[in-house]
Image 1 (cartoon, rainbow, N blue to C red):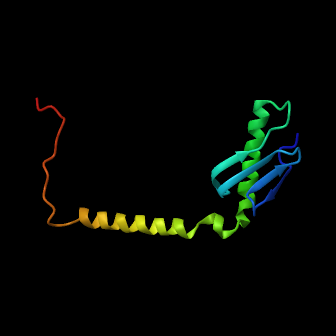
Image 2: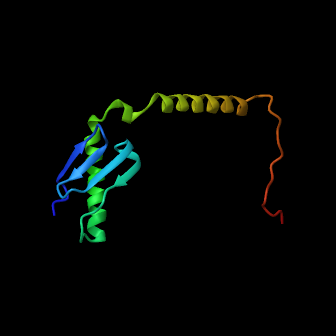
Length: 112
């Protein structure tokens, strides 16, 4: 069996092997958030199933270089990233205050 005989449809996020097996992904093709494998062909061993699935995901990742920009990032994700960055900056400013009180340090070392 040729494990490299795939065709991709990046608009739908699917890849189809010559034997009829299909994989559908969601998210970035290089790091998908969900993978939906189709039904494997009859009589295929578990090792070949794993190899077929792996080769299909690798094929989608390689084909993902020309993926639509909506797969790379979304405005909602960018907004979340900006909100997280803002909170981290606020926490950093709070941690670096010069008037922050000194706290005693707890040591678990024995003094003997």
